[in-house]
Amino acid sequence: MASRYENNATQKLDDGRVVYRSRIYPNIPLSDNDIYIVTQQGDRLDSLAHQFYSDTSLWWIIATANNIHDGSLSVPDGTTLRVPVNYNRIVQNFK
Image (tube, rainbow, N blue to C red):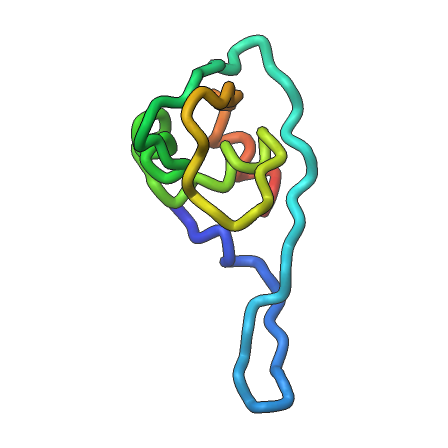
């Protein structure tokens, strides 16, 4: 699977470092195939991505689908999350 940074623009900072520019993904549309789960103790976005997509790097799909933008992979216990099933199409659309 390609990196989510693959097509991101870079920016050179005044101190010489090169960083990726922020990229905001649009909302992921609802689908009849989406799965809804209630998180349990220890659930993290990356482990859920592994469970549903077999790829921990796709945690951002679950985060984006649920408007989680705080930079944390942790999710409070008892949180209802939407897990989009059509992740391949989502990745292709955001390239």
